[in-house]
Image (cartoon, rainbow, N blue to C red):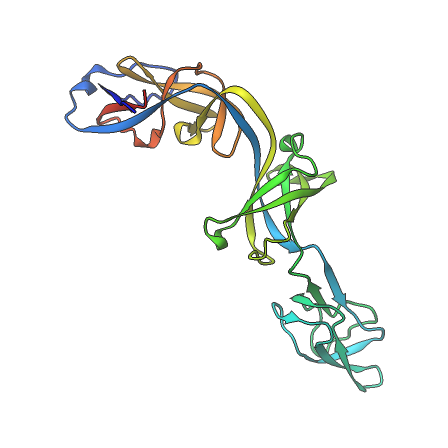
Length: 287
């Protein structure tokens, strides 16, 4: 593919669209920056949020009578099998009893303490099934209009490097909650059964695929500069680079729709972080 080149300079403009200053053309330092053509694309709208891995099935170990734990034989994080000893306790007659788990799984909580009264039926230990996981998360009131049960979700976590996991939205709350960051709606995401590397309690980032828009003007996120509530791209126009304010529409995983500010077939800087106002620029395109 033949590359075309031209030498132009950069101006960083705080407000509006202003042409580049001519004196920059005489700078001796020079960098090569790629520009890309903006043309109609299909963009998959993606709602991004964070969540925490939990178990779908959580059971409580209980006892039918009031007891006083004497020795707790497990700790949080232990893996239990059905029939394993959870604790030794004293009943109201000060006779020793042994309490066993009716479930297999991971101990996620021990709500009782040695020597403290545990009344009949209270939870002595909480057991979660690590083989059926889900993610608890919240989405904004605005994003809730795009999200629905059944939509596919890509899941990432720092604990598993760059690997992605898959799941689906399984539930949306019918009640909105007022949170410090705005009005939020709780959702649940079921992990596919084959996704076994995630651990209960892990923090995750969720990418929920909602819908697809076709034939829209879109650019990669690396092209966009954010400044407060405003967004800008750098447009190549003849021998100038112009900082241009744009309106962002649908946001996908890699691309963002440009609703206004840049027309189809415009040439924009692919990675705005490469620009340096003190250096001349050699623009490289794929034309």
